[in-house]
Length: 369
Ligand code: GDP
Image (cartoon, rainbow, N blue to C red; front, side, top):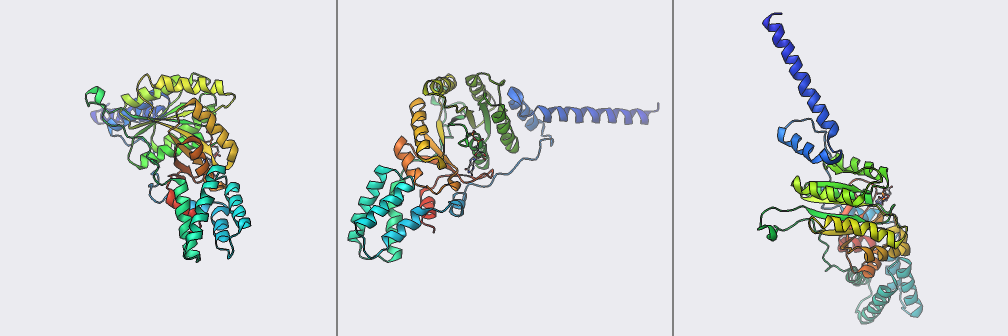
C-alpha cells in the first residue's frame, strides 16, 4: 500500500468516526438526565449537527389574534345594544345582568358592574354609540383589573444568600386538571421564553401518562429545550427535583415543570402536588405556580380552581381555549375567585397561540373593535 492510499484510508476512517459520534450525540440529545450535558457538548464543540430549531413568533401582537378568534361574544355586542336603547328601564337592566351572567362574569362582579353602569349612564351627557362604547370599555376594563401585576416570575435576582454569586434558574410549576391544555401550555410557554431569549429546561413530572412526556419531548425538541423524564409511573417529585438540579447545573434561565392533574380526590392531589413542591423547595423556591384552566368549562373550571388553590399557592392563571368560548367573562370570575391574575391566555392550537394577557386588548376584542 503506497503512502497516498494509506492517507486516503486514514481520512475515510477519520470521517466515519466523526459522523458516528455526531449521530450518537443527536440520538441521545434531549432524552433523560444526559440531556443537559449533551446540549452543552453540542454547543461547546460548535458542531452543526443540531437539528434545525423553530424560531418562535415574537410576543408582541400575539394577543391581538384573539380579536378574530373569540367566538360569538354576546358580551360586548349585547351590552352595547342594550345600553344604546332609548329607554333604560328595569327590564333592560335585568337583560344587562343576564348577558353578564351568561358570559360567566359571575354574580358579584355582575352586580358591581350593573350598579356602576346605572350610575354612570344616568349622569352621562350623551348616549351616542361612541360615548356608550367608551363608558362600557372603561367599566369592563376596571372589572378585568388593568392594575394587577401580571408579570411572569421567570427572572431571578442575584442570590444574595450566595454572596451575589450565581443566579439560580427560575422555577415554574404548571398545575391543572388533565385535558385543560397543561402540557400544551408548558410547550407553548417554553417557546414564549425562547422567543424572549431565555434558555429553558423542561421537567416531565406527569409520569402517569407516557404520552404526556412524549408530547413534552416533541415541544422541547422543536426549540432545543432539553426534557428531563423519569421512568413511567415513577415518582413525579423525583423528576421535578432532577429537572431543577439539572437546570441549575446547566446554567438554564428557567425550569418549567409539567405535573399530573388527576383530580381523583383532594387528598390524593394534595399528597402528589404538595410533595412535588416540597421536594423542589429542598433546592430553592418555586417562583411561579401557574394554574391552567380551560375557559370553556365555566363553573366547573371555577370548582377546579378552588381545589387547586387550596392545595398549592397559585400565583398566576393560564386560561386556555379562550378562542373557543363565547363566555369571556370567565377571566373576571376566576380572578375574583382566586384573587390571582390571569397571566397568560391560550388562543388556539397553534404552537405560538399563547399570549401574555393584556386587559385592554381583551376588552377591545370583546367590544369587537
Ligand atoms: P393536558 O392533559 O392538560 O396536558 O392537555 P393537553 O395539553 O394535552 O391539551 C388538551 C387539548 O387541548 C389538545 O388538543 C390541545 O391542542 C388543546 N388546547 C390546548 N390549549 C388550547 C387553546 O388555547 N386553544 C384551543 N383551541 N385548544 C387548546
